[in-house]
Length: 449
Image (cartoon, rainbow, N blue to C red; front, side):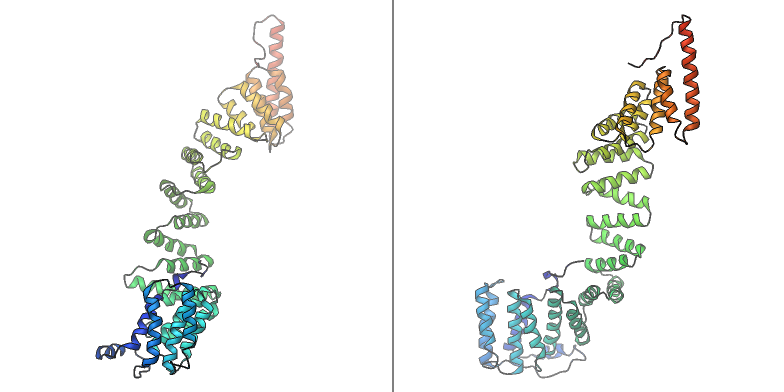
């Protein structure tokens, strides 16, 4: 949600000044009188006029605004003093005063003195002879100013009055009131109001504004109505495509445990080169691992590392190595896990590396990695690493060296049966080979270098 301290809600600009100053100096035509009849429920009265003396003074001040879009501040402050001195002197009538207050309000607004602008505009509204249409338009302006100052209760009050007075209530005004209700924690009313605005636009085959859908999305999200959030985000990514909306859509799919949809959205961001930061790259890699597509997971991690977004630290390299292992790319896995083990203080990665070496029948490397893992420690199941070490030693015909390893592994209750079987095998095979060697048989002994 926006903070409110922005000019996006202050669209009244110099047109308000020029339009009403013009009314002072122009005669009323028959067409204008006819057009004014469209304002039903508005009390009709004869068009008020600004006296010549007051008009001359106001016209001089108006010219300053017409000369440039940004009058200099010192000149504006001087004008404020001049305007303040007009009420009660050359501009005496209630209607004339309302026009002075209008210029004062706009001057303060141009100087970004919003509290004094509000004060002047409220004085205009309070004048009994102020033009009804101007009073209504000014009330909306005051609401916008209150909103920009985060005075939401005052903004809501002015918008409610504006709705009751205006002949035509714009959807922008109703949406602003919905936003104001949101900040006042009147969220049920806010949702009802903004939803009506969105529905009316769609029914009229018009495109709802981005901020209307965004407010609606936030309100539904806070109510944990995630399917409706998905529906709105689909509209936003279609009509107002932004990376943030795709990211939010992926996040909502994650909350709904729709991992397939989350994967599709996140990978689309990658294809659009919109993945930013390590977290997003890792999220995509884990989604591919969860979908049992480890080759793509590994490629994503490599791409993220090449882009400099994913750090080549022990944890990330271990994840990459795991992905290559699951993809049955053992040589690639070995290369990566070797790097990971060199960066880690724990023996966990070295233990993983020992297991891979055993799988590819590099028993000497498996022995070195397993011993390194046990020396470093930090293993959640050291018995498994001892089983790897014992098996590698047995493959190297180092049966006597394997016996104490399996004996230690058998202390793990889960591994005791299989470790016991290995222990009986290496003990028996070791004894048998020793007898053969004693009898003069020419057979190799332990082949560990």
